[in-house]
Amino acid sequence: MCSTKVGHFLKQYLPNKPHKWGFKLFVLCSLLGYAYKFIIYAGKENEERPPDEPDIGVVAQTVMKILRVVSRQRNHIVYFDNYYTSIPLLHFLKTQGIYSLGTIQRNRLGKTCKLPSKQEVMKSSVPRGTYAEYTTNVEDVEITAVSWKDNKQVILTSTYVGAEPVEKIERYDKKEKRKIKIKCPRLVMEYNAHMGGVDLMDAHLGRYKIQIKSRKRYMRIFNHLLDLNIMDSLQASTQSKKHP
Image (tube, rainbow, N blue to C red; front, side):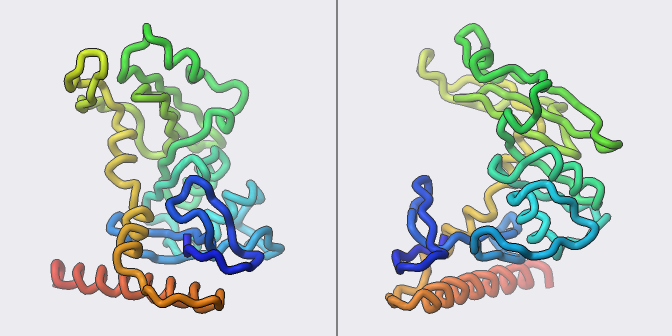
């Protein structure tokens, strides 16, 4: 979010964000918070799709648009949350040689989904750390879906990793009032290790952003993008020192 309360049709209200009012940006980031590409949300657009991109929804189309800068058939891996994840998107990215992993809403897995429902998973008789894994083949693309019980049910899908090998992680148990070890599927570990580049970028921008105030909407966007360029420059210089 590029936070501002300036009156403009591009301004969005997102109640779950720290800065609830502002211009919404979709950003492709590295694990260290380096921004490769961004798109400023401007509502529904009538932009023509390239002939090799299918019509699989507005959200998925945003992901495909921002990933056009990513080289095909190079085994890159993309991570996203349940706002973006869908089976058609995972299938398309895999056909382009891009692997993916993300949390997903259960209703996007179809009516024939065999994963347990939230009501079944959250029963007290089901121990924490319980997981269920199913794999399907969608037009020669293998997609794995895993349901895992932590504090709540977590469902993830991937085209390159599954539940095995299962590892042990520590969680605090309120009943026993101590830390216990529970099972954790491999794709959950992968997701936790690699997801968060955008959040890290936001954290950096929040600490060092330009404090100049303006009622002109374009100045707010300009300052935000200037901050973003400065952070990318610092990231690039840091990496060049580590790897001369």
